[in-house]
Image (cartoon, rainbow, N blue to C red; front, side):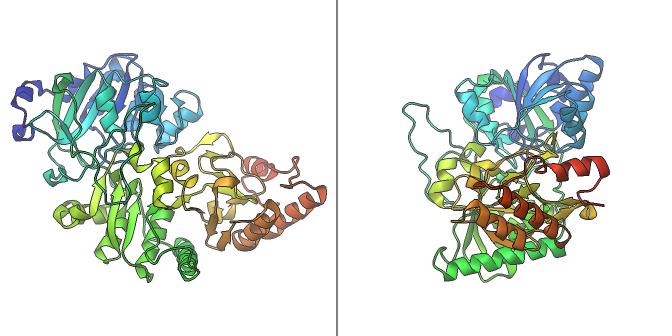
Length: 497
């Protein structure tokens, strides 16, 4: 136990075990918990709560910033304690419970959760559980590796439980920029005009009287699951870098491109890594998650500054970054996700947004979330916050999945997360389709010629030609539009056998 991390001495008597803290949480409560993409989540209390729920059945509604690490969603799902979950998750056990209807999942744009809480469109949390690196002399909370929705959860909740993680580098203090927008109807614009602007404070300001428990932990964040780029992801990166280089030559982008945003996962991380071998310098990021590629670019002297809401690293990068945080600290800031994902800021800063599609169709509609239109994968996350307002809205994916049984480019997407109106550029390992300024029929030709895998190109062109013969501004044959998905469900492949 390290009481020096609790710099307000009157809070020392709030220290207790995770099991004691878990007993404060009651059946039917709404719980707001820290955590954004497997970073900075409270760890000991939710685990103790899951163990408690095995013998004392209870249900809670759980809201976080985004996904949790350390198998917490799995443990809480198996304990049967989750009635509702929002706004994002990546756990396979929870996913199964969502798709079977056991857990009600609310899939939200990540910038909207706090806004709906602020306007009482969602029930305010009864209790907040926040991981911290320290508590200040004023009783304010210094977050760890993510901010997410933690600040507003702590402000809105009637009670606050703090987990002080002594395994987190105390030099994280000073990295955060906690800014809470003012309330309508007198709300003013956020005073942020550059990625490296600081507009708030370094800790979450709350009344320390709300702190009902402090638990000490020493548990690491789960490492990210990103892998090294493969031939396909490298090809996607090469297509995109070539496109950006041409945009600079044509005078549509500055030499340093403008702030970059990249979604989570292997493909987006690989695309960012592709910039390592490019001619671009003095890059900046204004994103949600700072991944391995962020720090690779900093180390290479390519990236000057990165703004995000969390830091999620692989085992390869974790020790090098957090063991040497002072090297990076002046080039980083972590913000609340309603600021990192704020639509007006995305448009103001001119962000280039790079996100991953599950599938897209002939006309540029994107499905990011649902397999065959019904089965939730993870959630929309922040991609919608960025895509609709970005200077360039780019979506990337491999052209096929499951060894070719699935085409990622289909006649009509089975679920729409981002409409054709919000999409500028589509990239697969096959090539890049620039959809800007094109009508639907022109878009379809670009998509077929540049993005579709050869094993599906002829079939998609045949569908398109027959749809055009039928007519319409956006030609479709409704009886066949989802036939590829139906064939997949019936036979295990979209290919015609």
